[in-house]
Image 1 (spheres, rainbow, N blue to C red):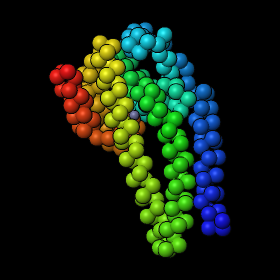
Image 2 (image 1 turned 120 degrees about the vertical axis):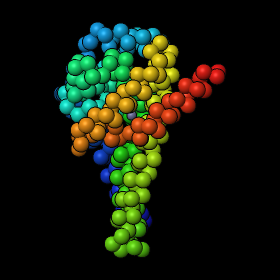
Image 3 (image 1 turned 135 degrees about the vertical axis):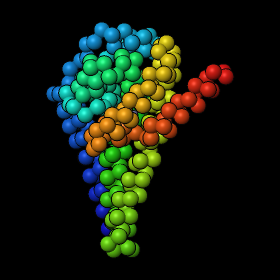
Image 4 (image 1 turned 180 degrees about the vertical axis):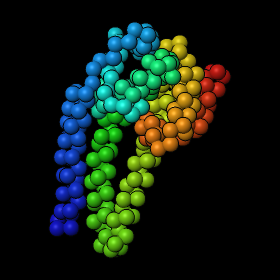
Length: 228
Ligand SMILES: [Zn+2]
């Protein structure tokens, strides 16, 4: 029992932390967001809603500058003000914005957004427990190894989520008559943004796998659908 106590404490900490972060995220999003009201985008989200047999798809604007789209653990979808601005300035097309919305819908539909919050707190618990165990055998480096292992696991998990959300979005966009093209052109544009402004990497790209690999995965899907 004595040996298990630190692990139990770490798990308890993880659970409390999960509840707290979920609450804090929802609160932050409530305060800093409004519903998106854009007729051109609505026409596209209505087509996606029809493809999904939903009455409508609600999208919110999150008032921050970094270019990002996100799916909250409660299933709400957000586009940042910074991203929307790129669209208003004509740098990103309505179809490309729709592809981001479709990608975030994928995270919600596939249960990623909820699981990711759990992953995050679960990771903390795992990290703490591993560090405690490893430190006994490897004083000093045990913590570093535990951190490395936990991060590696997290990166693996989130990467496969991204490919799944891309595939969901591709299928939805094809069904809604938009096609996969805008998804691919947007990846290219985001990559360009990254290079032209060194240091200011769009958040949406940072948490995602390499652009070229994502485009390749989409093309593999397209090829498979063409054969079918
Ligand atoms: Zn994503």
